Length: 362
Image 1: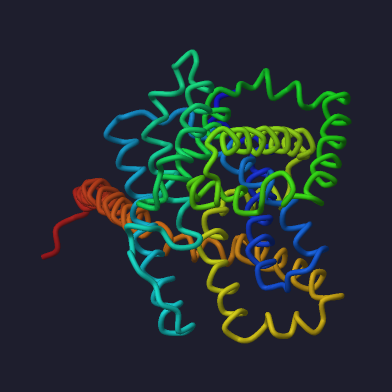
Image 2 (image 1 turned 135 degrees about the vertical axis):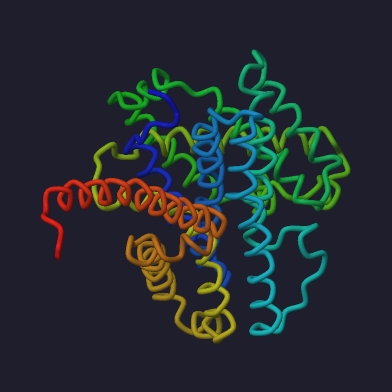
C-alpha cells in the first residue's frame, strides 16, 4: 500500500499520538512528584519517536518538485510563521512571558514544524540511501556534541533516525506487527519501558528525552558516556515506537476520521494549556495532587477530541492553511465562471431555436 493511501492504522496512530502530545504538554501543569514524573518520563520515552516515525512513513512520496515544494511552503512554513507569531503574542501579552529569538529559535511547541520542514527536504536523500538508517543514527549521536538552538537543529538531527525508519518502512514490514506474537511482545516492551522509567535519572534524565540539548549542556564532559546514553535513549524510543504501532487498532470510525486534523490539534492546543497556566491552574494542582493527574489527563483528551471534531476542525483548518483556503475559493470562483460561460451560449441557442418558430408580432 503506498504511503499516500488512507490507511485507518495511520489515521488512528496520528490521532492517538497528537492526543498524547496534548496530554504530555498538559502534564507540565502538574506538581513534581514521583507518580507524575514517572508517567511523564514513560510517555516521553516513546511517544515523540513514534510521532516522528509515522511522520516519516507519511512523507515517503515527497520529492523536490515544484508542486511538492509549494505544498511544503504552504502547509509547513506558512503555519510556522503564523503560529510562532500568534502564540508568542499570546504568551507575551496574556502570560507576561519574555521571549527571545522569535522565528530563529522555535518556541514551544513550534519545533515540530521546523523539524518537519528539514526532514521533508532530506527525504529524497535518505529514502533511496541503502545505509540511510545507519547514517541517521551516526548523525544523531554526533549532533549531541555540536548542534545548537537555531531552528531547533539539535532536535532535527537528534530525532532523524525515527524519521528515516518511517521512510524505510514498508507495508509488508508493518504487516508483521499485526501478528499476535508481535502484539504480545509490544505489550511486554511497553511494560518494560514503564518499569525502566521509574529510574530515569539513574540511566539518563528527562532532558535526554527531548533530544534538544548538547551533551556538555547536560553536564557530560565524557563524550563516550554521552554517546552511549544517547544510543540507549534511541533504542528505548525505537522499541516503544514500534510497540505502539503494533497495538494501534486498524478499524475505522469517528476516531479515525479525526486523524485528518492532527495539525489543527497540535497548533491550537497550546493556547488552552498556556491559558490554564496563566489562570493559576498549577497552583490548584499543588493542593490536589491526588486527583489532578486524572482531571488534567481527561481534560487534555477532551481538548484534543474537541479540536479534531469536524465542525470545529474544518473551520480552524482554514487558519492553519490560509493559502490553501484562498486557493480553494479562487478555484471555486473560476469553476463557477467557466460553468456560467458554458451555460450562457446553450441558453441563448435554446432561446433562438424557440423564437425562430414563432410568428412575427405585427
